[in-house]
Length: 213
Image 1 (cartoon, rainbow, N blue to C red):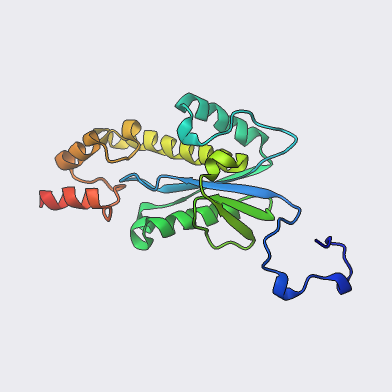
Image 2 (image 1 turned 45 degrees about the vertical axis):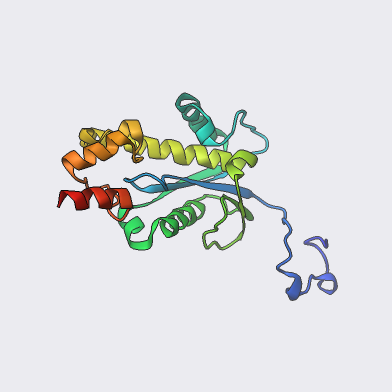
């Protein structure tokens, strides 16, 4: 592979520009939290780790305890070269659909980074539209430390949102179920109807609200 200092005579032809290779530069990991719940925003995070300040214990956020996630959240914010957390609102979820809203939140997270990455690694099998090279990695949150870090930031941020919103609408129990369609959550929907942050286009919410009419 020619180096970036190659002469024009050795420049890679344009037709080969699509070849998969990793140019030197910063790499960001991206992940989301909140696609499945029945309420609240979907959250995405982007993280560029500092190789000189390693963080032990990074893993898929779902495999960590809440206490461990909280500690790693603070450590990631302190040690990463830069990080960014972004949301797509309930209104955007209902207008665009949950997949497109998730990709929008991911794009916002990457664009919010203080440093511009050369490569973006995204958990899953779909990519947001970005201005730089990006790759989707299935189970990336368990394989790539930067994606693991992003999954932790996104998860903790959304869990904190649920805890704060629970104070406004304690009858739904958001602090416990984090917006997922648990039996207790569905029972609260049947009893109280929907609050402003419920995703009314999600079938469990639609079914419950339809039964109340």
